[in-house]
Image (cartoon, rainbow, N blue to C red; front, side, top):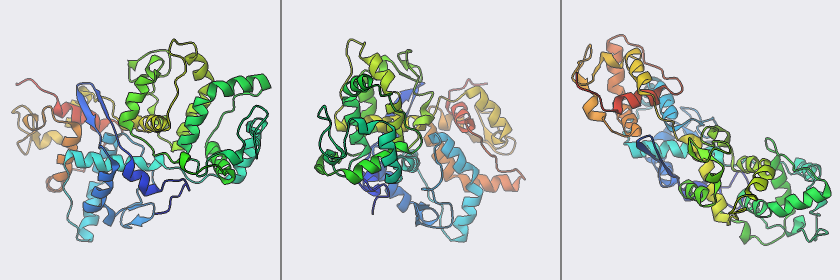
Length: 400
């Protein structure tokens, strides 16, 4: 498959080689797949592709999941799927497709695979990039050909097929030197908004005539990126949902801003570069250097921060258990429901939330039938409600 971002790796290659990560907090671990390869395979084998396309490839019954915003946390995404179960079941019946069953790991793999789509850049505009190359001050140091006055490489010396990860790594490692030279020349640290860095990168790539092999870098492993985040001293300034230092931003609380394409994440880091480099230079460890693979891992880690749900509120979950009508069919701790006596406490106590989600999906037709027979409307979940409900269901409860 040809890449839409014209980089040295294709869209499907990125899907097949990227790995995901584990973050533990609040008493349970939310485990993401080791590789989106499994999610891609499951999307086909479980029949999702019969109804949904991905970037134009696949079924036309449902929306193209590669073209809509799926930037929700894992359990908020699960809530959206729940909300559409009645219409999904009707569509499956219409095309005579059996509803697939999923376990927790499979549900996690598919949802992470879908979440990963925004990571891929759209092609930049080389014409706009040429203008930015001058406006942002790059031309004052980097000529179109040859070398600059201080030996800075010209555009023709940049590697061919330049990837945003390679550019991010090189810019960071040379940041202190760049900051010094820009200060001496009176150049302000440029800021990049929207697609500006994509446009600049596309312009650089059209003029690069250096070696091709050095620019090839895979997206990296978010799990390994968490280790890099610690090893490189990022925790000395930044925390993630309270874990780490308090001096800088809590990146976990601002995780949604990293749900952007690869180059846009690089832009965010660049825009903070002047302040970050200055502050890190004051620390005993100094400014760390990144190997290409390390930068790839770090950017992938930041991208997946938003996918991790905050801990649910069991008190709110108890209220939802009643308001959404769950209490009419399910019992907790031996207290029967109004119409049924399907026990939840013993079945799901201590289970991972995603395991409960998968079980609900597997029994959704029976749930829908029972609700219809009793005149109940299919409950709809707003953002944050599913995680609260699941936390209430899974926590140990006192016997009456």
